[in-house]
Length: 167
Image (tube, rainbow, N blue to C red; front, side, top):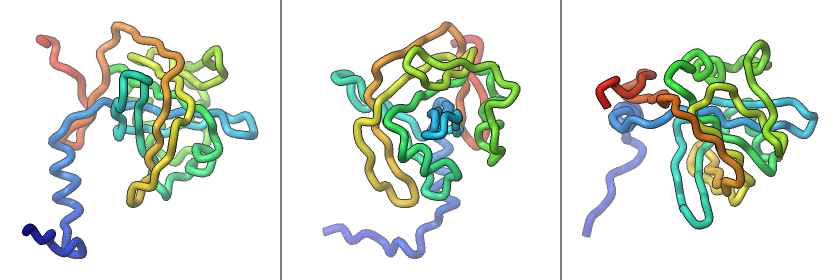
């Protein structure tokens, strides 16, 4: 029988480094809060769950400044960033209050903030929420989407990058 090690001695920096070996896409999760203001945050914790129904998941840190706004929202959008949107990724990763100021964006037909130039956008209604350690996992059912020919922005080994041209 396997006995797991003592988690108190777990090396979180080594864990973070190991996870950085798995490259992932970069997105911005967006909502409109109860007071009508757009909010968004950069995410890399994004994954597909199911094709039927079309489900995705992402997670938000319990310390995130906009956690309460995302908890109150019944719908959200995932903007999958294009390779040339690195500055947008960095902008939405900061704690700046109005991340949308001076940015090219529009409301979807169902009222969600979509970033112009994104490689893809997914508008979702909240399917479920789950506790996940120091994060909350949000599962959404996709009901509307756009997809362009833009090359997606990637995150891996602690850096933002994109696919090599030869792919």
